[in-house]
Picture 1 (cartoon, rainbow, N blue to C red):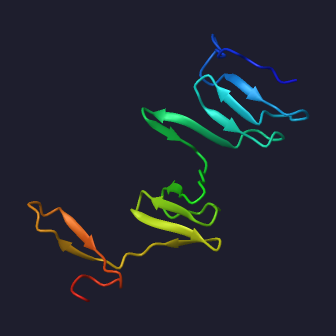
Picture 2: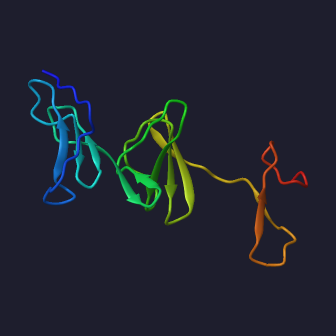
Picture 3: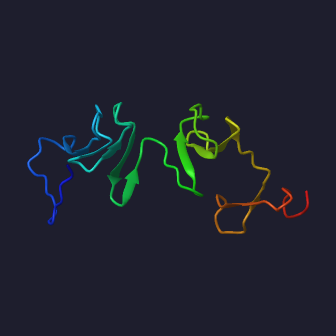
Length: 144
């Protein structure tokens, strides 16, 4: 039977940040469908297997998941070390932080985004400043 609370619930004196503070199960579940640990990490499961999706605070003003976050009409983002190899949902965008490349997943396949831009100096005061310019037709601004 569900309980009603008219005041906030405070869970105190847990052993560590990884200790479960709150768990929710449906009758017959072997695992909690949602758990909140003392450190604030939220973990979700099917109820019949251990948790497989998490959301937690990884630094000041930064929420993180070790999984995939999908938003209706939004972006799925995966950071990889090298070309991605994980099976992800179509529409996933991957950033290869080792080789500074972008990939997207469509029709069950990873595709590297290849730039057709021309690199030109931007006229700034530093030789290291570079501007990439791509016209809608994929050519540089001089029509090449």
